[in-house]
Amino acid sequence: MLKKFYLIFSVTFSVLCSSCITNKDVVYLQDKGTVVNDSLQIQALSKPYRVQINDLLSVNVKAEKKEINELVKIFNPTTSELDDTTESLYYNGFTVDLHGNIKFPILGEINVLGFTTDEIEERIKEVILQKYLKETAKIFVTVKLSGLKYTTLGEIGSKGTVVLYQDRVNILEAIANAGDILDTGDRKDVLIVRQYPDGQKIHHIDLTDISAMKSEFYFIQPNDLIMVKPLKRKSIGAGQTAAQTLTTVASIFSVLVSSYFLARNL
Image 1 (spheres, rainbow, N blue to C red):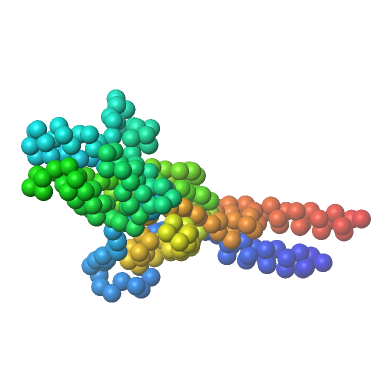
Image 2: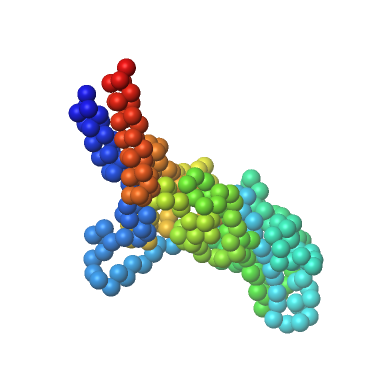
């Protein structure tokens, strides 16, 4: 009977040891044979973002000449002492409605759905010049996203919604700002739920492979949902390190031996 216990112990030990979390599971951007040369020069793909429903835009209009600059102020939202706060951006910004429009002062509704910020700047500038100013007037229209908002869930340090005031943010920066992925998180299959005009789609990216930098999902977009699944090792209760695994194995072995001698003395 003791041989059976040793057999069970050996099998359990093998399973738990194979379940240890290794460097390959936690190190980002490893060279898995996808890099052709030693220079490691990889050009990340980053397509211009096209505005979606519920995006929040910040629009500002200025002119070169002082007298014209005073006139174009009517196109700008009312400012307050809280201009740089999140609350001010929410109340003074322009939310893209369900029809893809923003309600712009004086100009009324302007459709922006599917356009880049550069294209929206040209559209607003064109309307102002045609309706209210001479075409020779030099005005400057600036359109920006009012922060890049994304949400994190799963095996990550800080779950919830984060807003970064940057034009471009890659997924590693986004994860770092959310407290990094836990050791029990699956870096090889991170899910990105992205919003599109026709609905939401789920994409996968392997952050342990350096070729992830070539992925079109390496740079996040507004309203992205980043989900990190737990490793299968976590579900079976194995230790994250060799020491933790050895402690687990020792505990199991102690229980098996105690059970054996208890059963033998009955």
